[in-house]
Structures are given as C-alpha cells and as structure tokens.
Image (cartoon, rainbow, N blue to C red; front, side, top):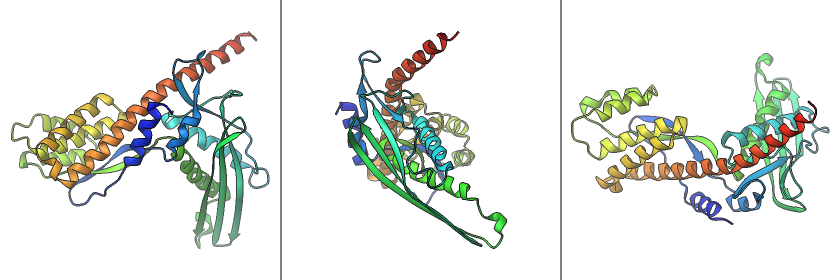
Length: 312
C-alpha cells in the first residue's frame, strides 16, 4: 500500500461530523472519504508504458447478471449510474478497454421485485458488486434498497422504472462511497459579528460569498476570533463551489488565526476546522489521484485515435 492510500486510510478513520445549532447557517459542498479505503491498494495499477506512477482504474463489465430475469432497464440504469458517480470526482477512473492484469467490476442483481396494489406500490432491489483482478475477488458487497409509495391519485404514483431508478441510484451510491470520495454537503454556522457587518450573513444566505468576503476584508474594526472564523467559512464556501485550492488556503489561514485567538476553546470553531481540514486534505488527494488517472485516459484516447485512423 503506497503512502497516498495510507494517508487516505488515516483520514477516513479520523472523520467526524458534528451538527450545527444556533446562529445563521449555510450549506457548502464537501467530500466524504471512501469507506473501504483499505481495499484501494488492490485497485492500484502500475504500468511503466503509461505512467511513472500508479493509477486507480476499473473496467466496467457491460453485462449485468440477472437483469434479463428482472427488469431489462436495470442493466442500463446500473451502468449509467456507476459511470456518473465515478466521473464525479475521477478518483477512480473507468478503463474502457480493460486488461488481463486490470481490475474489473461485475454486477449481479441478487433480488428484484415490484408489486402494485392499486393505491400502493412496492419495489425491492438487491445488487452485488464484485471487484476482481483476475480470479482474486477482493471486494464483494451486496447493497439493498426498498421503495414504498402510496397515493389515492394513481396519476401521482411513479412508474416502475422511475421507482427502480431511485433504488438503483441509492445502491450505486452505497458502493461508490466505499471505494471513492463522494461529493456531499455540510453545514457551517456563523458566529456573531459587529453591527457594521450585519449584511455579511445576508449575503452568505444568498450565496453571494464574494460580496460577503469583500465586506469582511474592508472592515477596519477589531478582527477577533469571530471575525477570522466567519471569514474562514466564507472563503471555504466560495472555494468549495469551484474546488479552488488557492482560496482554500485563505480559508485555512483564517481558521488557524481563529484558533490562535481562542478558537481552540470554542467547540464550534474546533469542529468546523476539523471538518475543513478533512475536506481540504481529501480534495487535495482526490485532485492528485485524478491527475495520475489522466495518464491512463490519455493513453486510451490515443489508442482510440490510432484505431480510427486505420479506417480513414
């Protein structure tokens, strides 16, 4: 297991979420760490003809076992959902060709049922995901979801495929969250500010983080713990939207100043900084892994281009 995967393992073990209560709150984009991070070393591939480093990639088997015996739409739903979830961060990339020494993802519909009782409809889905390299099935996990809907107005009930799509999305999210960081949202709560800065939280509530930051940066009064903590939240919010690592450094600097000014004794500041540190570290690692994976994608694109030119 390389140092990169080891650091993700430590990060995953240290994650914690504390709820916010009291002051003005905003929701900002964040990341969750992969739950089965210890298995990531099994996905690592090194190919000196492609890259000097290691990449994380898997070949997606287009045949989903059990789909024909259940609902023919499920195969497409599962494949499309896995592709969408993986490309959300590209922490693990998709190898369109696969290789004898590569990692394959196979899916099997272990159980599927759909029942309609007039005003009530029920759907149950169970999918087994299998990651393997050759004959070594190093990750085999089954995820379940059940959907129940009821309405006297039958026109408001979803179709079987609409309900199945919701269930597929849920089980795929469970699986991807085991092997890859996923985008999520977290709450941040502001602390009180001087009267001159009352508009800051109003701007933030409207997601005008740039305007709020400008108000804070132009402030000539006392820049205490509350000031630097709130400014850190604003920089974090603005940076998180576009995953701007430069702006996240400003957020980090202000979190540290808030800690120095007494924040280490404030539960709200301590919890927010801990969550920020986890997000910042995880985002950095995700970006680096995506860059390493790009070497494989470039290689596959060049192979596809060469193949196309043969027929021109």
